[in-house]
Image: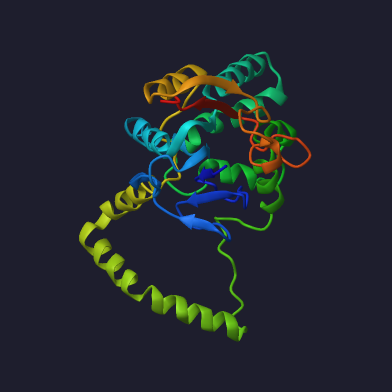
Length: 284
């Protein structure tokens, strides 16, 4: 069996071929997935991607899945995880109803659900308003957020007191090593610095628009959202069959939970806000 994990981030298994836009660990291959998948036809029995498809524009999503289809062997399995639009919308409506009835608890949850629906689509800088939310001194609905986002939120909560984007890290100028690293960094960035200075001079106020455009094309923002109907329809248009809605632990893939990709070693779900779906490539 040959397994392919696309856009793996820091969730990968050594039994798999792991690819991401930048290498995130030993054995992770750096590759721009907008340029296709760098393997021959029918190379893998399983193709898996988690929270990747929503970063492609709607017009490019089919091309990405067509590539997944191409590298799949006949009767191979594709497994896709994306944020679940249906679940998010239902939770938002419930939060709206409860907050409107005067519940402060649900008013806090309502604020979070608005961020969950829109922030990663509209943000113009890394982390967006979600990052600011995690940096609050007190988060009243922490348990609700953990239920929504699972291990991902837990990791952010652990580090929120150590990283503040509004307060740059203080560099110890007495440290020789730090000074050397700063000098190396300045040397490496010398050309870019002058290029940016020229762009600022030429563009004036429009330079900020350039920065926002660079960020929004950098891959962090969500370009589209999916529910169980639209994702199944997209998989069907790519020629896949036996399309099935899954839980984090259910799969056509043998010993799926042993890889700890959608679940943790204790069985909890890594990203509970996800929609999980699988399909099979026809035998002929």
